Length: 377
Image (cartoon, rainbow, N blue to C red; front, side, top):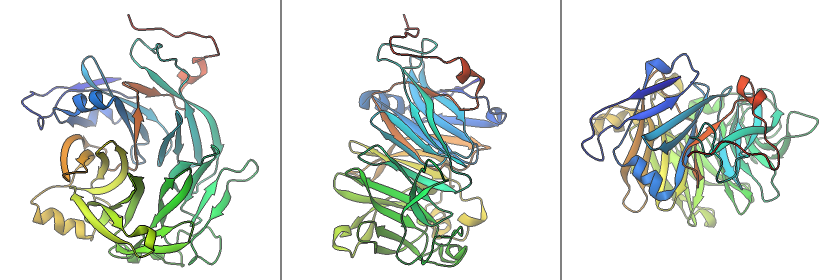
């Protein structure tokens, strides 16, 4: 299904047309808009953007074509964390860990449009672990945040998962979401830092610590290096700095002194929403925003920050210039979808698509070494 929204173009902050493709029944109740300069920025950087929403059950791939922005949507059960490494797109979902490969050669296209088609080639059935962020180690192994069991884990050929690491304050491996471990920062092919909503070691204990119990942990030292955060998410290393989203306050910032073991969170920018999902390219941070509609997001400092800014929360992606701390471009979603989870950058790809493991199309999408797909004329 194609849905094109057109609005008058007058400048960089004026909403622009977005062409979308989706099989979702909610697609007609959703409106997409973007800043006037977003497509030009994606073209200049030669990137596209992937993001997920467990609420809609869709993996979104935001790219560009000759008509402007193009949004491809793929149905996935509760899609969560994303990682793009060595051409492989890794994804954690409701009960699976998936690895997508793009079999297209640089000159090949699908439907004379898509220059990348991500196909799930490895699917590991984990069961309901509430897996969050995901990364890939230097040896190609997938590592993910196993939130239900308060640990970092990797797929196991026999079992649902194999535990790799857990915080020192959790005394046992048990299926009780105690601290709400969620975010993962990779560095040099290994897990470096994680975020959690609290240091609780009782079932659901994190819910009472949402306002200021958030922490950042150094994985190698198994030591808390930053405290007093509000529902932190999406730790990422970029240009030697540890960036974190202080979600409950709508802040993106850095942890200064992270390597010393006594880090301090320093905000760099405020975004009008519950920030979650972070990816970098050059001097730009791509930040996911969600509306704080549900109980777990209510009663946080973000509410007051929005009032002070005389602003309403919104759902979408803001592109932040890390040098100035200002939002330079944006992509917005209005309607039935109000929550995003993760954001990832796909370098060198203009207009990507993906296939769901359960889609009818995947049965007839056959490629092999030496095969050829249609090329745009």
